[in-house]
Length: 462
Ligand SMILES: Cc1ncc(COP(=O)(O)O)c(C=O)c1O
Image (cartoon, rainbow, N blue to C red; front, side):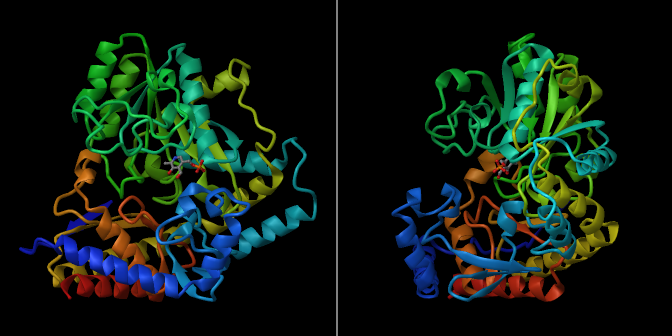
C-alpha cells in the first residue's frame, strides 16, 4: 500500500470558485451527451429513476454505454473513454478479455444453467483455496449474497445474534449490514461509540439493534463491544482495506488485533473482500496483509464481468454447510457460465505477469499524480494498492469515517467531471470511490488520467 502527499502551504480552492467550476463542467458534460439524455428521458417511463441501479444515476445524469474493449468503454454518443470506473471494481481483466470471451462462448454453446454443479466449480474453488488459504468455498451471484452468507454463518457457528460492523464500510444491501454505511457527521454520534444508523429506508430497527458499530482502526472499540456484550457477539465483518470511503488502509497490526480479540471471545472475523479480493493482489487483502480471517467474501472482479460471488472459510465454519447446519442455497449458485468465466479469470487472465504489469502501472500513476499535486501546491494524498487508487482530497491521511467526513465532496465530483470530459471514465461519487486499473491498460491510458489531473489542478487555480 502506498500513501504519499505533496507538502504545500496552499489551503486549496475557495468554496465559490469550486461551485462555479462544477457548474461549467456539468454544462460541458451535458452538451457532450444528448443521446444519453434522450435515453434517460425514455427510460424514466419504464425503469424506476431512469436507470437499472440507483448508483448508476449520478449528477448531472446517468451515462449510457454501448460497449467496452480492452481498457476502453464507449458511450451512446460515440465517445471513447479510458475506463477506470471498471464497473464499480469489476473489470480487473478489462473488457472482452480473450480468455473470458473464449470460455464464455464455449459455455454458452453447451448450455448455461442446470442448477447442478459442473467441473469448473471445483477448479475455481481449488484455486481460491490455494490463493486465500481457506479450504472450503461456495458460490453466489453478488457481493450482497456473499456477505449475507458470511453474517448467517457467523451467527450459525456461534449461536449468537450480535454483529460488529465498521462505520463507513459497505457490505451490500441486505438488512444486517445496511447500518452506518455513510452516516452524516451529525447523526453518527461520538467517534469512540458510534450510533448505529440505518443506511437505507426499509431497514427494521430490530435489525439495526443487532449491529454494534465501531470506528475503523479502533481496536479498543471492538474490545469494549465484546466486554459490554459477553457471549452475545457472533463476529465482525470488515473491509480489510476500506474502499467505500476512498481508500482507507488498516493501521499496522489492527486486523490481527481485532481477530485475536474476537477469537478470545469465541467470535469470528469475516473479511469482505468484494472490492479488495483479486484487485489488490492475487490473494486479496488476506494475502497482501498476511492476516487470515475465518471467512472471506468475494464477488466483483471474480467473474470478469459475469455475475458471480464466493464465500470461503475454515473447515470449522464451512463445515456447517457440509453437515447441513446452515443451508447455503441459490438457484444460480455455481452457474456454469459464471464458473467458466471465473475459471478463465483466475487461471488465464490473472497471471503473475499480469499482476506485475498492473503494479508497474500503479507505481507510474502514483508517482505522476503525486508530482502534479506537488507542482500545483495541492495538499492532498495519493493512495494506491494493487489495481486500485484514489486521490484523497484531504491534507492528512484518512484513518476512519470521521476523517473522511472532512473531505469536501465537491472536489471529488469536480475531479470526476473533469476526468469524464477529458475522456477518462471514473466511478461517480468522486470522493467515495476509487479507480481500477486492468490487466489490459497501458501507460498511455494512465497518462490520459494524469493529464486530466493537471487540467483539474489548473482549473482550481484559475
Ligand atoms: C465491499 C463491498 N461489499 C459488498 C458489496 C455488494 O456487492 P454487490 O453490489 O455485488 O451486491 C459491495 C458493492 O459495491 C462492496 O463494495
